[in-house]
Amino acid sequence: MVLALLLVGFILVLLFLYQKRQHRQEQQLAHIRQEYEQELLRSQLEIQEATFKTIAQELHDNIGQVLSVVKLSLSILPLEASHPAYESVQNSRQMLNKIIYDMADLTKSLHTDRISQIGLVEAIRFDVESLRRTGLVAVSFDVSGNEYPLEGQRAIFLFRMFQEMMNNILKHSKATHVKITVNYLIDNKFELQVEDNGVGFDPEKKQVQASSSSGIGLKSMTNRARLIGGEIAIQSQPGKGTVIKVELPLEREAL
Image (cartoon, helix red, strand yellow):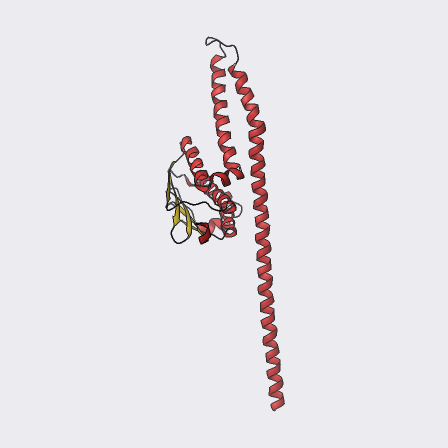
């Protein structure tokens, strides 16, 4: 009887140790899988940034120069004001000026190195001013707290998230006003908040709609936030606008 009890106890201990080992292995595999997925996502985003940089360089070095040559050619045409083509040429020059100016803005927004050089706040401020000039939507931009530089990759990812927020607002929200706030908090936290008075949406429903551009955009922002150790919160309801907040804890050494 005692031997049987000891045998049963021994078997139970073996089962417990086996289950514990299995659980530990599953945790290790899950951790390895998570690290692999994060590394894969990081590589994809790095490739994307490299592509943006290449496009920006191509726009500046090639297309920009061609447009400048065309503009110069139009400016030296020997046309009097009375010539039938004079007004058309002047209109073409004005359109070329706008294209060159807008393309310069686009190039600056795409170029990764420039974001790192001027910092997150200045990069956002530049895009805000460009948006104001379009007259598409009223924009307010406020910065509070003691501003300090963020590490390069964090600044780039946050700026791309900001661009995705603004892209979604312009394409889907029908908003007339956007409020952008950057907060440098005293408890070693950074906050970026974008609020609009648009039509709003159901965040849970939108995030599972992988086929929609806004659904993909929300997923992209969530992935970027996770990669830099941040969190993103989305508050929205149909007809009640949207608030998106990104919080990022910072090391004390960065202050």
